[in-house]
Length: 422
Image (cartoon, rainbow, N blue to C red; front, top):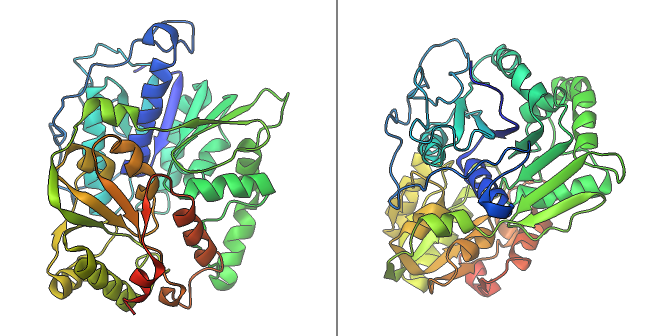
């Protein structure tokens, strides 16, 4: 049995896993001698990843279930979807054994494919990776919880990528560690810090509520778990518990929280600089898929931006549907690119346009860090309130505006650019 790592990280998306790698790199280089000394034993960071991005050596097709056991059981610690039964990071001889990353994959194929590739990069760094199915059946979460309980209780520090995740909140009921680290899950980090500062329950900004009586019953039953998570994420001075936020977002921590800025130093040290093309690239968003923006309005906006900026490529968000992307391609002539890794890595590797245009999203905060010194201009296009659906949450308008207004190092497109799409 693999010994428990002193630090345990839980990730549910490719971006979260990227940010755990960024945090681990920052943690290592901030320690004298470049070693992590959480438990008093010097541990050097893992070996350098290859300069070229590549899929995991054993990556399965994107729509394949990991290990296809059908049981929902965890792969052996240090294994990912296509790697059950053999040790990972075999070339590193446990160089980074202080950190174990547990992947709790979603069900959509694009996310699972990106997670496999990110797991390959984590193995290149020498970190232990475990692939744990926690979805796909009513009993799957409880089986996963039982499989992880021992390591969760033994960990001296826990890193999470999505504090809003109900599964992560359930795991927190088992956590004994005095130190929690929250790494970015995109712009949701802004809402997380704001909600904990106000003492509110943790609710995603685009969630409009509802669900009728069954939904209210589920909320009532889950309330004690949610309340415990809120307490764990809100440290009090002098109580011994520590919460660090590792973020590229413009957040102001409160109470006994600490903030460390994620400047994408690991990404910049491993990849690039990129070759620049003469054209403009557009970055897609899942605002339609989350029910925030009307599909027809979104198509009109993409068409207007394509014409105005001479865009040639559209980098799709991993949650965008094939039907939507087909309609965008037919209406605009854009080349649709479905990245196999988070956009920060894709852009850093290149080729990438000299101008990158995005709607309000995580990348307007992260790309300026990842592309520092490359000459790429990142621009953000406002979301016109007229684009919002009737089911969009009351917070949607102000939250999206805040994402745009607080973006650093980006060019903000005039409002009429967005309005012209209507």
